[in-house]
Length: 264
Image (cartoon, rainbow, N blue to C red):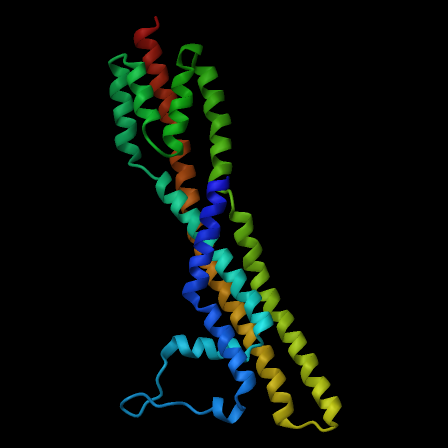
């Protein structure tokens, strides 16, 4: 548990550094000191076209969208993405060549080499191998005991596969909620300015509306990206669960054949 937490924190820190959040914060502080007319001037790149690319545009929009709410959306994205990466790595390491593994177990049991089959299962990673090892450990107790052990341990392993997914769904829900919260507060600020000035001017309303819409856009983008990763994770979990169920049935067949051949 501690190792996984450290991995999540490390990945989150690396992603935060990669996203350049400190640079965005510095630019926001600089924008408070430099007149808005100076910030609006773009320095053309060689060739006469404005330079900076997508990364620069994202930082500009990040600053324009109120750094307080945009920072929370960015944190939700970074931490949620860290959980997604941790799950993808864990599930990828859980995948094995199931057909080859089952074939090697079947060959060992056909020879009556139960210890050899246990060693193969013990030295192979993944939930399928763990289920086989638990079943082979109770081979001498009968098929019914092996079946109960496989079913019970399979449920435990399924829980491990889904571990951390609830946090991903939390950040998927949080990102647009934070964006909508920024939208509402931006609208309130726009109406406050109208009340202070006493005039419904497009320039006054546009500033608050722009902040409001930018936070909403970024919140929805973060939720969409995390949702794509989450669906990919669910697909891998479903595939591994199906492999576990199919392999469990095959294990019971192998146990029955072994008992008929060597325990009568």
